[in-house]
Length: 282
Length: 178
Image (cartoon, rainbow over all chains, first blue to last red):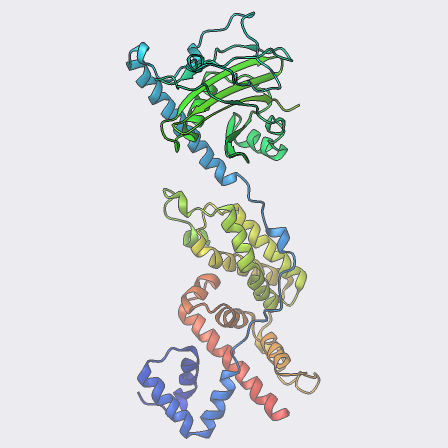
């Protein structure tokens, strides 16, 4: 390539911009070294490269930041619900094809109602285990329900979702008061009201290693309907999925303005159960 | 007008959809540089801040259509268009011909090289100033600068060339004065 006074300026520009191939760059650099005029020009054009003023910052950045909302997770949430519902439907269709005597999981919609004077469920207290049970008693899977401080009429009989009854009675652990309605924060309630007007389950390990379960329900729906119960089953089933050989017992009761959901998780390693009272938002 | 360039061609893969977290990441990563770009061009803090906010509002509104990889270009294009609108509104587009090149040399005092460069850049025509800032501040190639400004690659290159020529001459004159 011929370099002369006419195109040298363009060459200097291309050299600065990195547009030259290696051979041309070598020639141009030699020309710069040999010619003081071009050397001065080269020094001047190198000064034209602007340097960012990094000390200039946008001070109102906080106005632009958005809270990490459930706007996107909401979409995922609905998908998750759809998958759960689909799984439930498939499951119950499968159940329908099985012999009734071989049913493993109960359909709460078909659970027999309890006679009004038969049992009461303690409203604010969890069902306590009977530690003095004999081994034969322990094979019974229906928990001993204590007298309620606040009368709550169960509408669904607790039924064990186990094909083979566990050999030990489930250890019913009282759910601490804070997780009864109070743990679910107001923002969570609000977000649910926007994104998913149904019940949700948040498993959370306690200090003792057991699993506590946070349940939340939106205002105005104190009683889970059939689809909601199915969702609950799907939720819990999904939750206990990581455990080996999980067996699930689920019961629900209703009284006044309260909803009691009781479920038991029996695994090959331990048993845990909880009764959770749900309070609708005042 | 930028929708064609930056809109995803398919919405099947929702993984490419910008999340809230990614949006906030854009704020953290690009708001400062975008503000510098605007401030350098406009020399008005309030206007620069307004355009930064408008730009991120548009990004937020269209975050489902903008993927993270093109978010920065998208924002610069939005900001650039906003800036041009402001210039037109305020009739602030200045032709280089209208500037008396000798006017500043003996009337202003410069504390150092940085001030000289600032003054020189401020005297560039808007289109030259924009492309050289995008080139040097952001390191964009000619093609990306062209996408942001709506110029062809050749136009971008010649504008950068002219800007550097102008700056070079300015620095040369300054050396003679000093």
